[in-house]
Image 1 (cartoon, one colour):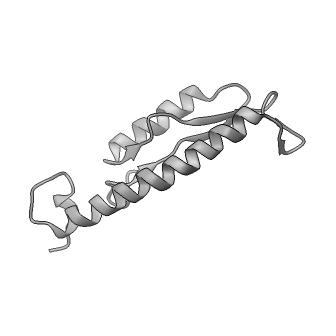
Image 2 (spheres, one colour; image 1 turned 135 degrees about the horizontal axis):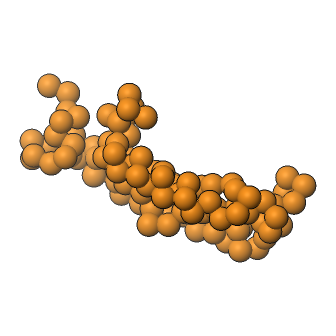
Length: 104
């Protein structure tokens, strides 16, 4: 990740984790990585537990399907907002955290 922080700066990370349990630790690590890369994350992540959400390679949990629908919707909405603002910040002369990413 150390080599790609510039590509991730100002972009949206969306933690989606498959785990034997809940994957909370992994989601928190993804948030930490995103912060280190000057990226944004959704305020929640989606995790799928092997024993309750997935069976024989298929999603069997209605709540997981609902969470996936929610994360897709929020990724589309907030990803578009952040992308628009990222472009504006890169084209601007204002000094913000994306100023260091501008091409001279």
